[in-house]
Image (cartoon, rainbow, N blue to C red; front, side):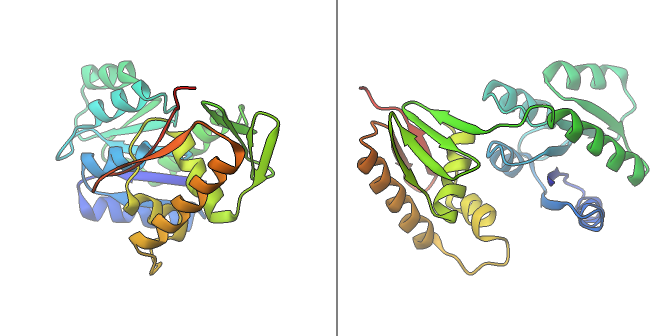
Amino acid sequence: MRILIVEDEVRLADALGQIMEEAKYMADVVYNGIDGLAYAVSGIYDVIVLDVMLPGKNGFDIVKELRAAKIATPVIMLTARDDVNDKIMGLDKGADDYMTKPFVPEELLARIRALSRRQGDVVLEELSFADLTLNLSTCDLWCGAKSIHLGYKEFEILKILMSSPGILISKEILITKVWGNDSNAEDNNVEAYISFLRKKFFYLGSSTSIGTVRKMGYRLEAGND
């Protein structure tokens, strides 16, 4: 299971990351709302643990933007204020659960397990965007009756892009998610695999393209056909 933790109290955030790793979960930790949203829209997480008060963008706005972008990842919101109105606002914005600081780590883990089980009721077998369909079991990419098999990194990059249609995904996020935090991969590695994917789109005769926004990232764009 992969968990995203968005918390501006660095010691708490790092402690939560350690707790997740000890529970055998993969954990990504970010410390502000701007980075939190950028990571969350990738759609690759099983659960997001999200603080309410964050620099850059608050937790309420992050949840609202995620739901508007059709990102259904379960969200547990954290707050230092035991205010019923805050809880109601968070749930109304699209959060799935709410916890007040301080809390017992075992309870947080139990709530994460509960949300992941609920999410597990629906198992996606494929992702679709415009005229493309990606089979998540075989790593085959289809356009109409024609298909091509994707390599591991091609598949992972395209899965991230197709999970967040129309959302800009930065090179930094792709490197972190596909190559890993400790990787020596650089921007040109991402550019090479984006080029490979574009050639496979062309081979399939797809009208879909991978758009580049200079210094910001990539996103899928539907063709006019």
